[in-house]
Image (tube, rainbow, N blue to C red; front, top):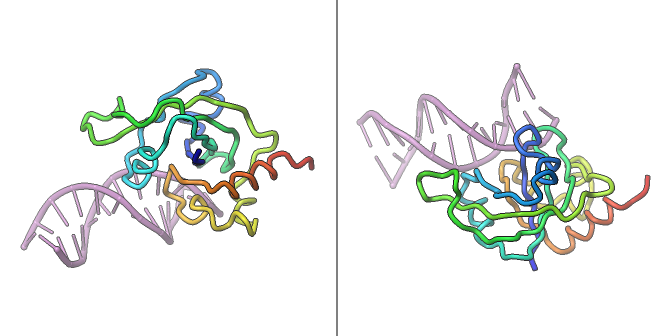
Length: 137
DNA sequence: GCCAACGTTGGC
DNA sequence: GCCAACGTTGGC
């Protein structure tokens, strides 16, 4: 099973919107690198939901429930989307600031390529973030 | 709101 | 097929 991180602006589509809908098409990805990551996803993969622009933090965990297929919002037929469902929120959101200041996490793709909206996460990074998310402060 | 870092477009 | 100009993303 692979891990991912997917960005969305909460103004457009936030964690609360996913909770309300329970399942959603992750559409609108118009970047080849991000699209290639979507194509590599398989059902059962898990992904962090990250709030970009406003929030700048990982707020929840999703599961991929349907692999990549043509994006319904794309007329050109070039781009794909996957379907996701929420699993659970993080007890404590993990901010980009925290990621960048953590020696285990500051090499994460999301920290190095800020404009990539779908990025892979290694198992070690995944575990570390879950650990930070459950720390009681 | 600004702008750096990208990605894309189009003239040549 | 190069690259200047332009548009977009997203952290700050």
